Length: 216
Ligand SMILES: NC(=O)c1ccc[n+]([C@@H]2O[C@H](COP(=O)([O-])OP(=O)(O)OC[C@H]3O[C@@H](n4cnc5c(N)ncnc54)[C@H](O)[C@@H]3O)[C@@H](O)[C@H]2O)c1
Image (cartoon, rainbow, N blue to C red):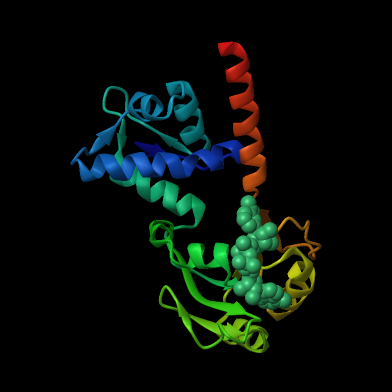
């Protein structure tokens, strides 16, 4: 396997990488040392050329007839995504969604470490959710500044999202995983990635409606 300098990598390619990682790790668990693009493609219902193009975009090419060295490919993907070092994050809004994320053990596979939660509800402050301490909002800026945590996960109500964003950005947060529906206004250099289950559900619903229409 060779690794050249990566060229530009599209967002769809980046979105596919976690699925590749998942397959590679499972294959490793089954003691497979080398994996072909066809193997990965078959598992995901893609064309092998798609997988090869995605990995070539990262500067990785397999060896003809041998495929990719699974361990090297895992390291290359982790390195590309910046998942080779533990990334600490604070979660803000320890309600239904926030608690579920705080308790999701799978994030450790992506080296995301939710250090602690923050909430304005005094009944939650001082408690623990899935082993993560819940701090009051008055501690948020101080702790961001002191610990140098760069990532915030926003799982609070929409109406509080912009105000809290302004505060955490001023305190030093550089990346926000935004689960609210608000389009956040942030200064240049601060990265926001919004998660939208409704968009995904809309696709599911539409495709289901079309499939049912075709069955009639
Ligand atoms: N992205 C998605 O697809 C998706 C899916 C589900 C929910 N959501 C969004 O996630 C957010 C949370 O949803 P939920 O069901 O967990 O709600 P929830 O009411 O269960 O939890 C919200 C939490 O935020 C806290 N909170 C309220 N105001 C706050 C403030 N000013 N500062 C700090 N904490 C505050 C509350 O005390 C509560 O613990 C909502 O904005 C919702 O729209 C998004």
